[in-house]
Length: 88
Length: 88
Image (cartoon, rainbow over the protein chains, first blue to last red):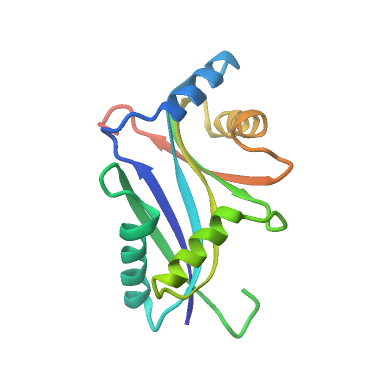
């Protein structure tokens, strides 16, 4: 079974986000008044797994080891099964 | 009214993603077999707007002008109203 995963990696709330602050002040100069901007990563992965439990276990491992830095980042993901009979 | 926007900026499908390819081959070396990896940006913004239409118009402008490069990137966003009476 193929699954599409959408992974969101965000800085922990206690960690400063200088890129977000830069975007916020740029938006302010363009007359958009925004209260906060936080920038993270968005990763789309297509993977093979027997079922949703296995897919989500694999993704947890991949996120912990490679995609996110658990010291300063949080992650969450959404899984969707891709129908293999039809065009995905 | 305050809105929280979650913005996803992704490379257009026709644009090569060297970072995604690097992650894919790293995952392969770690024995995770994934078919594709695409890396994008994820931005969380809290903004003020009169209603959802105004918020989404402002965000479209901000994405076109600042957050995404429309030549090589697509974006989409989700809006959620933040209750101001309660803790958000």
